[in-house]
Length: 231
Length: 255
Image 1 (spheres, one colour):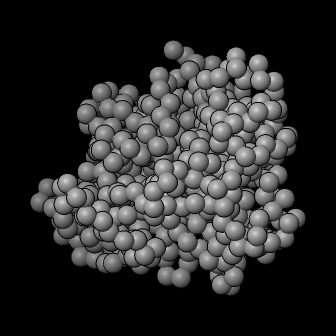
Image 2 (cartoon, rainbow over the protein chains, first blue to last red; image 1 turned 90 degrees about the vertical axis):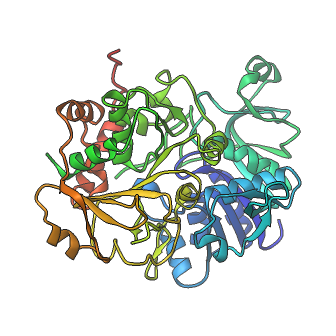
């Protein structure tokens, strides 16, 4: 990655954050722009290392364990740009990029202050004439995702029932120019064929696979471990 | 009867038999109300919680996520499908807990003064999509109920009711009117705590307490009293109870 790349991270708050890959980013030492649905330890670690330039997310915090202190300091001191987004803005952005479009039309956000803050444009529905918001495509240079397991060909699996918001990661992976997935375990092609209903990302969509047991810690990776939280 | 229970009663009263309620894991009172309404006066209602469709679990199991709800729901709905449901108004009602709600019903979860808040998640989206949004707030003060919010995270037109720790405010006619006052408070004390003029609905009286049946459902759903999580003075104790309870084995189902 070059300097100031747009990096997308998967997971949601205290769940399945790609922390091993984020630590690799910190070691690489280059400033990044981060986009993620619900930011937590990913943004916080990059902020602490002084490498986070800009965060686009719908939330940044540590849920019941408190606020993201290094991130908040960075925003207050003007070192980090906080680009508040909404769930539809982000998911539509990933979906538009995944479809090769530059935007998706939506009713979401009409009448509030976010469209002006994000400089969104409007679009006319050519059939009904309805004025809609054009949610712009978000195309990360790389998507970093941590998952339960994969085969050596790169077919990636999550357990069932999946964790909340699991499908957002799929759109992120398909929106990004490159997708790197770290997993708890690499299993045989036969094992994955026997449980193909659990495959969520295919080898066509995964550019690199990393074996990283514990790679989501301190956040959770079901069914292997829970988040490491003490109050 | 605690303020939390009066508020859950008022929230549950907003739910009818035909409602499909969207409610997040972070809005505990709203979630308890949706669960309790389905067990009492609105058995036909549905709610979704972290992707599970009307899971037959208590609050603690819901907060434990998929492992706590597995086997207790007939459907897991992806987030994309949830958002699509909102776009086509398959959800009829959403509960939100913003930092501020103003006289137009507009809500703010983004920043108050120059203090940045953690982020609004779907609060920017659902008020422009769903036909009916019910907001609640556990700390009714002039700063949290201003004439005009500092930032419009979600627009106000679809916000129909606001339930606070002091009263119930009706926005159905487009402007705020006092519908009822919780026991222990007066018109004067509510108006002094509100940043905009608050005329009364003609029938404005005391907020009715939850029925015996609803109270029993609340007790069954939330035996760990996690309904205290959203109140400043009781949050810390409730978090300790949550942490202790989360690490116990899941209770054996009774049905």
